[in-house]
Image (cartoon, rainbow, N blue to C red; front, side):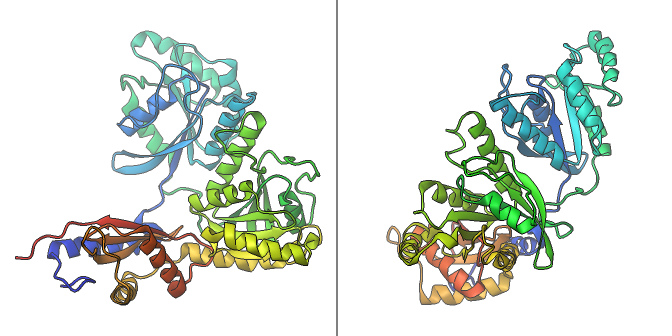
Length: 470
């Protein structure tokens, strides 16, 4: 059996590659969707320590001070042969301000997307007013809720555990996350509460596709959403930064229902923003990660700014499909159109594959073109190239344009497969490192042959040592 370079490959190596290719051709990259458990509670009750106990390994950062965990972090867990996802969250305080409000928002987002919720309470302290407020919210939740009484290191605290019945969430389960006491019984209860498959599969065909409206402040995101919905769904003001929280809206476009999320304008990097700005930036970043495709709005009447380029980079780095919409086109004259074309060629060379639409949220110009562009981008985002077709194409391409010589040796591409979709990710098995320029060349040729309009494409290289021929 020969590889792309015409040399004989080891039989076991080719068998492994073929099995990997077959697994990659399964929908969703061969990985079935997993139900999700959100671990929530007020600060410093031991949530991250409990997450590490559930995982059976030290993954979550743990420190003996409150507020170490801020973002929601997902981990893969396994118990009794069943896999599920654990979401570790920051301390949830309903009336938090500033940074703690952003942490609480992340916890709320985790709860809204989870299939079951695990509330952790410090048994040595008992039920506080914060715990009671959290429990009041969870009692209205439509998802199953488990109550964990943590820090029960010995039998002397069992009487304190019984007092947690007052929270109205059922039987409290005594656990010592630090020592592992009662963790097995807790995990059994978790498996009973979790469904076999998640109720909400990310990007599934059962619900509307999620679209994030992102851009710098005052670019017209809320105005465009109001134009699409036909109502004053979002507050619009000439003052930049009116929108703080993401606003979800179901929008009917071209006979199809979409879920649009209007987000706060991004002024600074998430890690350098402060106060309400940090809160807004964190939620906008989460909205991009939760979406499947993003519409990046750019003010066509003004020169491209650093914020515009940063927003585009956030979408691409998150691996989401992309549509560029140049808003306020009714304010653009001939001179500005000429300048804008030069700016696009110079500044947006990284995303030449994204569709560009010139719209006006105020007048409604070309808004109807958004739906076809979104469909094209999502089709590319979901696209899979069969392994056989991919390698036949790559064989011809490498024969015509081989990789450049590196260190006196020419690397050879042995095999290629598409490892996953959303975004399309290709893995090349080679005998040597491929230069960044050659990988860009491969991406360009991939797009010329297979399309992928509106979707980022990722190419990963795995160098495999060749065994000497016998």
